[in-house]
Each structure stands twice: as structure tokens, then as C-alpha cells.
Image 1 (cartoon, rainbow, N blue to C red):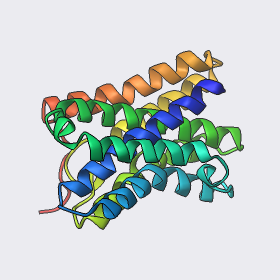
Image 2 (image 1 turned 180 degrees about the vertical axis):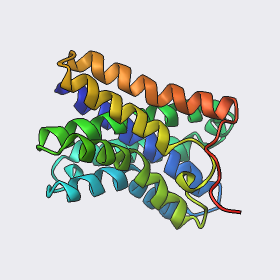
Image 3 (image 1 turned 120 degrees about the horizontal axis):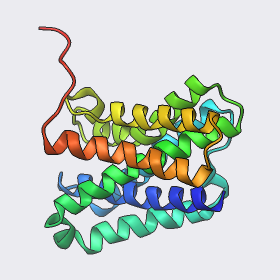
Image 4 (image 1 turned 180 degrees about the horizontal axis):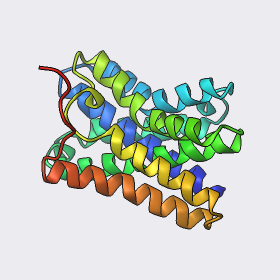
Length: 200
């Protein structure tokens, strides 16, 4: 399971970068940027762990806080460079939600969640940090916009649970499921694909 640990740390750092960058676009001070990066990085995973009746992993493992600190510092120190690399940051974000979805599903299954619950908790792991970030910044969260975001996470989570039930090699399953989330997200943005709007 060592691979999933490092994937989780990488995803944590990526989400900290995206949270801090989002805050700085609103001209928030460095503490506010750091706080926003923190809650973006740990929000989804903490909610998942609470539902699983576990202590959030960052409370016991300081490496997660170091990953968040690294992400915030990268965002602050390389703000101008990262600002010109919006496409690169989007790719990292797409990979990040893929990583977090797989980590969330795997951990939920490891603690005897049903397949359906694991799918939902995998999605929560990936999207809830962004929901908290956008709420703090007084923006409409991505999952409430037309963009295909949570749906991509659900697709990858369902694939992971399905392949896991078939006994597919774990590393291959993680790679395929992460790729599905990221590719769906990238294609949706590239071709402006969206779910139908409900209501008038």
C-alpha cells in the first residue's frame, strides 16, 4: 500500500497549491492563502475519515502537514510563474481529483464500507475540499456548476470498485481508475461538455 500513501501525499500538495492560488486571486493575505490551501487539501479526506469513524490522517501523520506547507510555499513563491501555467495547474488538478478519488475508495473499502458507500466517499474525498474552498471565497462550488467534475470522480470510483471485485491487480486498478477520472475531466473542459441543467 506504499504507492497509495505517496499518491495521497502528492494529491494533498496539489490541492494545497490550488487552494492557495485561488485565495491569492482574491487578493487575500498570506495567512488567508495558507488557511485556504490547508482546508482545500484536507477537507475531503477529513470528511471521509469522519464518516468512517476514524481520526483524520493528517492529525497523526505530520507528512501531510509538510505536504500542505510545501504546496502553500510553492504557490506563494512561484505565484507569477504558476499564473502563466494555468493549463498546467488544471492538469494537476485533474490528476489530483483522480488520486483523491482512488485513495478515498480504497480506504473506504479497507474499512469494510459497502461498494456504493465507497463510491460516494471516494467522490467526497475528491470534491469536498474544493467545495469548502469555493464557499470560503464566496464562489459557486464547481460541483454546482454545469462542468463535469463530480461525475468524473463517480465514474472512476465505480470503475475501481468494479475492478477490485474482479480481483484486478491493485496498482493496475489504481492507474486505470485515476486515469478515467482525469481523462473525463480534461475532455469535458476541452470540449465544453456539461450535464443538462435542471429547472427553468
